[in-house]
Length: 595
Figure 1 (cartoon, rainbow, N blue to C red):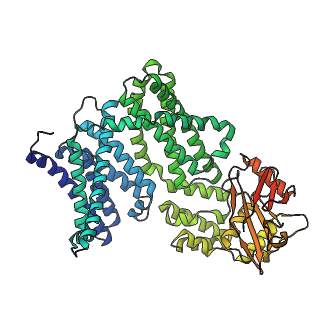
Figure 2 (cartoon, helix red, strand yellow; figure 1 turned 120 degrees about the vertical axis):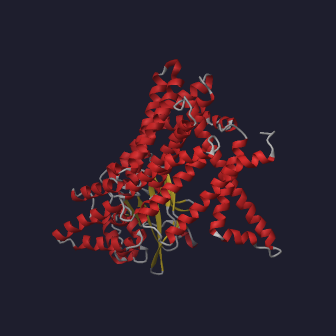
Figure 3 (cartoon, rainbow, N blue to C red; figure 1 turned 45 degrees about the horizontal axis):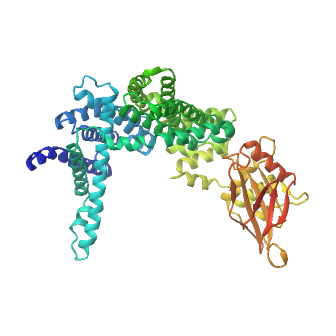
């Protein structure tokens, strides 16, 4: 590229810059059309899906392809993407409500990203368009070019802000005027993005940079050590204690993605990985299978406990995809023999096609997450597994599309037939509330009722002590509800998930006395049965105040251990003794209460 003249360089860059600028201007036009209701929601979504897919696909493929073939590739991507998004929008009463769900948008982006690499190779007329090496080069090239283009836009606007501040010192404001003119700002951003793509393309033949691969490869051994320690700890930690939350599943899926990326990088860099690199890569492939199994376990535990919701449907679908990848990697690594790397490359290409097909199915009517979730929640309600106040009514009304509305109608008909006025009121509130919190607040019991309910549930020590409802009259309803949720738990040992200790706990004052009447609540949080939460309460001048709570993670490394510790409190098998203050001792555990 060094011998290219300025005219040749400009001629090569102009189409990419023009495509970027046109894409930015198209974004502005779509935003204006949405704001001014020029198009119906379905037509606007179709235009958005088509133009977005066309522009993004063309920008991803331009460089390796001339602009005419890049636009052809963008069109080939845009037609099915538009159809799939329109089909997905049928789940909602208003088509554009689809864009409010982050999961569907991310799946569409992922499908487009996976498809671009295959389209690029096919349009280049490559004979080996299904080869691992060619597809890896195309995928990493696209990711690197787009990343550099985005970074250049941020650098440009950062410089613009600094320049505007400098010129503002002498009352020159044209840069601020540009930023305030939406169509111009978006068009310039698109042009800058295109310029960044063009410059990156000039530096190579479109392949991902070797430097990036080398840096990523350095992470191979550290990731193997971390994953190995995690898997070795599982037999001692126990599955039920570590998992059962979507956050656990998300962590596992993210780590599975990291492992898969590292393996793919090694397979691209080395024809036949040998030595420590080969051994570690093969071991990580096996570990990926184990992580994938744990990932699906974490999601399914949550579903078995609480039924399906759209988030859980998408999490389960992604976990199933991770499981397919993980098991395939592990089986090939174990049974592939000396040619395991070549076999895994072929498997990765096939998995890419399966991934694209799976994402397309999730966007189609075959996988309506709202319908699946609504049917699950109604079935649980009819079976008596969930009370009406735990039904996600607001989500059904506002987030689950047509299926959610149909579920509310079914519940309403059942409530009318049974004369269930409470459920009918909840349904009315769910439909009318603008936010979930507004719906919850509308049905919030008054503090006096909550205080009486907590007082009736709470086991108190020492024996003979009692706490009446007036003691909690000044506590916020949010905290009362949270503590009641713990008290309503039935732990593994059959005990309630809460206790109260009425003892002189806290900093010692004059004469060695604790200031104010003190109570310490000991709770098992419903969302994590392996923890104990300690909440200090102090009563002064007729008012009870809650201090900072202390949560001890994995109190005894298991739910049974936490239940056992709480049982010692409920049986009065604890000691209160002075340290620098009066503290609670549960065996070898010492808790300092800080009001």
